[in-house]
Length: 73
Image 1 (cartoon, one colour):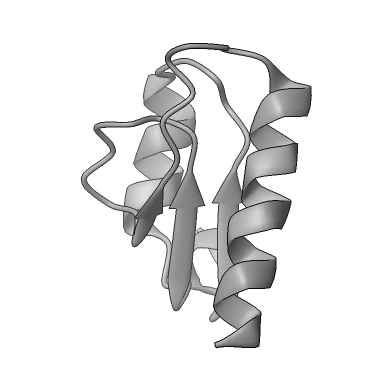
Image 2 (image 1 turned 180 degrees about the horizontal axis):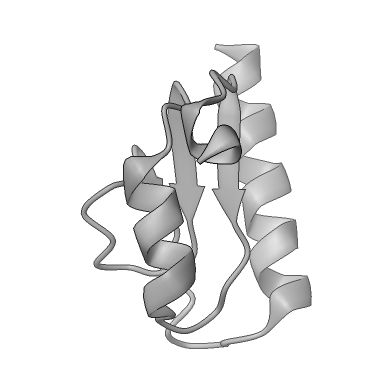
């Protein structure tokens, strides 16, 4: 409950597959900007499609790339 209520700037879901518990906390979180590697996540402002390569290293590379691109704008 304490984690969900905390007002974070960004919350990143590093799961490469659907996980009910993680998705539940992710959905209820009060974070301002949410990023997920689950392509059909309805609770994220940025969904990264990793269906071609479901790998944590690939996901973190993509998150780093897209967040650095957004930061530059």
